[in-house]
Each structure stands twice: as C-alpha cells, then as structure tokens.
Image: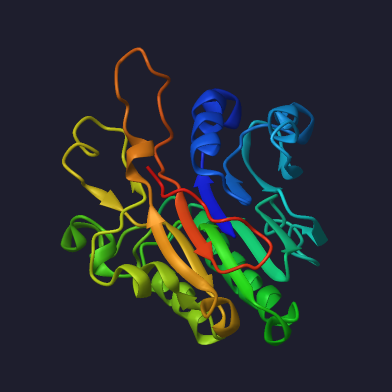
Length: 272
C-alpha cells in the first residue's frame, strides 16, 4: 500500500501537476493538505476517474484537507471529535483503509512564538494527541501523516542556530511533537532515513530550493503495529522543482511517500 501526504498549496492551481504525479506513482491513499477550496469546488471527478473515493474537510479558500483512497475507507471522521472554537478549524480527516487507521492533518502554522495564534497551535496539538490515543490506538495499526508545521530536530532545518527558538522549531512545538512520540508513535521518516537531510518544504524566496535551504515539516508517525508494515519512506523533492518557466508553479512542499506491505495491493513503481 502506498500512502502519500502532500501539501499542495491549492489543489485547483496544482491539479495538472498532481494528476501527472499520481499517474506516475500510483498512490493507494493520497492525503492532501491546504487544498484551499470547499468540498463542492474540489476537483473530485479527476480523482473519481482514477478510481479514488474522495473525502474532504474544508471551508472557504484557505487550508482544508482531503483523503483520497483506492481502497474502501470506513469509520471516516472529519475533524477532531468534540473540538470547539478556536480549535475546530477543518484540519484533519481520520479513516480506516485496509485495516490501517490513518489520521491526516494540516496543523496550524502558529505564525509567531508568544502570540495567541501560537498558543492555539500548542492547544490544538494537545487535542490531536488525545484524539489519536483514544481512537482505538492499541487495537489497530495507526499512521499519523501530514503537514505538522514543526521541524522536530536541528537536522530538520537548514540553519538550526538561526531558527531554533522561532515558530516551527520552538521548544514548546518540539515538545508537542515529542508528546506524540510519547503515546507510542515513531517518526518513521527519521528512522528510515537516518541522519539524511529530509527536507519537505522550501521557502519560495529565490535560491532557497536551489541551495537546499529547507525544513522538514511533513511527517509520518506510526504505532508499533503500523511501523512493522513499513517497507520504505521517501520524500520526492523532484516534485518541488520547476523544470521550466512555462510549467505551472509547484507547491512549496514535496510529497512524502510511505510504502507498506499490504496483501491486497499491487507493487508500486519507484518514485521518480
């Protein structure tokens, strides 16, 4: 089973790029963040024609998430149950696919340390952690995947000394990530790739991508039973590149690919 997480920074603006990537790499489950459209305006037909079920959770033209699956999806939950304002933004979808419980999320950015936006981000992570732990966590394989807007380790940012106490890398945000690990989730990107740079987001300012000044903000965390199924993990940075000025602008994030051993799915092509 191939599960992909990708912050596409507007699915309607990137649709041709996403379609081409999906056709080449054949994900069984595609988790999208920052779709930036309502469910009614999501280009569902493009994915229905490729055999995907489509679930979206979004409002207006900002944020939003989608979970697309070629396998039947059950027990679909939109958002975190019980969340109230200001923690009830449409940022997560949970579904059971092929016996795997998938939580895909688009975490709040936080904007700036010490602001109300940052406090909301930290509170949202507390709520997310509690929801995952109570959602039959010990009874089934569980994968949390998406844009968490946290670089948890110094190796996950191009210049740790410059950014260590800022938004995305502050001690309290890193503690929020560690709290997810404390309930029994493992950072499978880092365990699979070791000390390799595994950036998934690059600022759009000129030169940041070409000189690999990036951050690892997109993550996959698995409980023990899900981790035992994982065969490979890969970040497709080539999908972040713009080959020529005539091409549509890519998202500022790259797809995160997780391949698992699943008896009912066919082998997948290697990510190009």
